[in-house]
Length: 326
Ligand code: BEZ
Image (cartoon, rainbow, N blue to C red; front, side, top):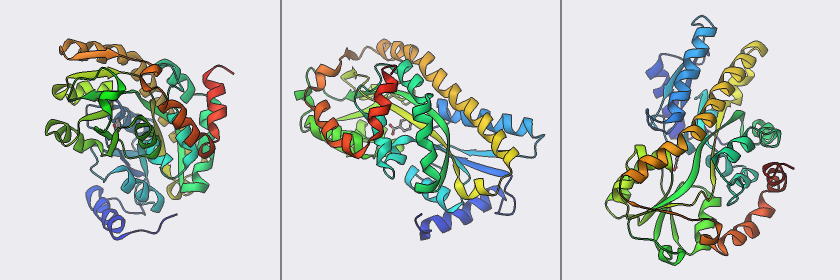
């Protein structure tokens, strides 16, 4: 586990000041996430907080901090590890930066659509992978959510993959997606979510890798000539609890938190599946060019990704078998 840096120590003090909760008051949990208040993940976190308070007669509360109020995901992960933050809904991308096996979830076209991705994330194969997290990175994984499938929004018109060659293409900061776009010949540009709108608007990047919900809700389409509906990767989220905090909870409290958080993570998956069609319809209504492409668009980049990641992420074999119903 990494030692507390000056930033994390300062954030821990700030957190205690915000909530009035110190280590002695472990029942006032704090849950951080990077998504804005309107996002499915944030709404699920709020609903989980409401259920936990209702079921414990108000004894256990959760204060939800959306929009990166507690820092970016790398910073929140450090806070979880030190016990200064209790819970987070976080991209699996951030976990894969520390546990490369989780890179397996980003195999291009591992899941053919959002429904298949949802089934895979609820499978025993996926859930069993969470068991290594307390030992490897000091967090407890409760279950998975998701943010639909990845698409590409481009300022310029895109007809073939050659049109993306050399283009600065925003990615979430994690390695599997970087390797995919390097293999495609683009210039992947890691950038956290809150910085993306301005970067696309002012041309700091030429294109972005994004999901349909945010293309619509954060209006990324406004700066697009072409939106490629490629569904090239799934984008899982994981509900995490600090292992330090977990070790101080009773078995009964752990069971309640697990049951209620899983309920809302499953709800995120269900909503992502239900809403994908509506988000696509909204984006289509904007009048931007919406081009549907499949694996053939990416050519050799898919095999190149596999060559790099199959040895680094041995879970890929089992996940692929589960994805194909094996
Ligand atoms: C992103 O980095 O693109 C992202 C992060 C969280 C939720 C959805 C998208």
